[in-house]
Length: 216
Image 1 (cartoon, rainbow, N blue to C red):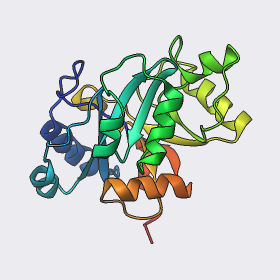
Image 2: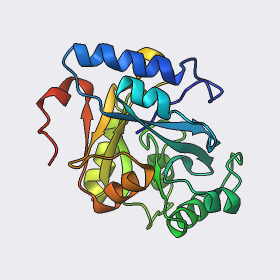
Image 3: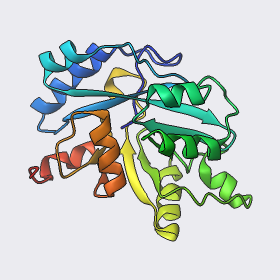
């Protein structure tokens, strides 16, 4: 649900390298069905990973990670209309406008690594800012430091937020360290949005994926 390829300015991993590493993880008994590329401050609409996805048997979806004045937000179900409504490169984007425009265009925007020191949503809530539109946050982030995921989970518990998991991978070995489990198969961005809005999902660590039940 949260990964960066070389299309992001701070990643050194190609999509193909991620998919090859997932084959290694599968041989070790782990379960990884799909990844979402959430490139920084952009959406690669014209990037086509379908051939690589078929070759490696991994669903590859696309999203974005955008900078706002209230931290980073992961956006799923990006449409052309949403891109036209917002400047994805704006590092001081209004988070309330982002969430509002995302829903208006059939997408979902949710806070990334909210427990992160300095830039996470928890910091702004501690300062008295309220986010009535938030109902889902990333509670399990593979790049978080000690205590940051715990802080995010505490916020989710306190406010009744649903939690997602994402690796926040920037290096090949980082992919799929944290994931999100859905009961139904998801193969398109629209289905991912539907799954998030349905609320039937939970975060999971890679080492726990083998115990997940089969999808209905």
